[in-house]
Image (cartoon, rainbow, N blue to C red; front, side, top):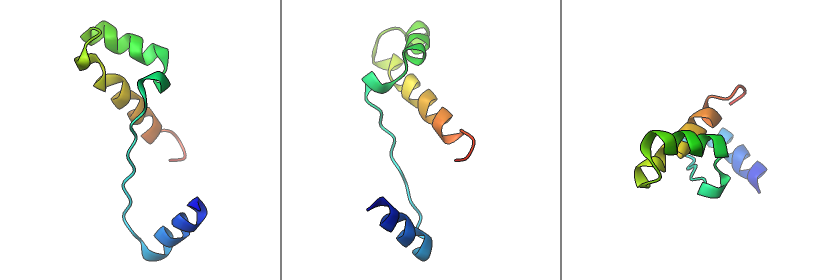
Length: 63
């Protein structure tokens, strides 16, 4: 199914937007720890781990 989607995207040159919304349990412990140390264990500390993880994924070699 995914291969068909990729094929159609290439054929039609369709712009694609992918959402990355990791569950908190999926965020590596060291990223959570750093965020909580910076912002405390509050809602303000939650966006940072996700942003940091997403930034790492998007800047990884081969992407």
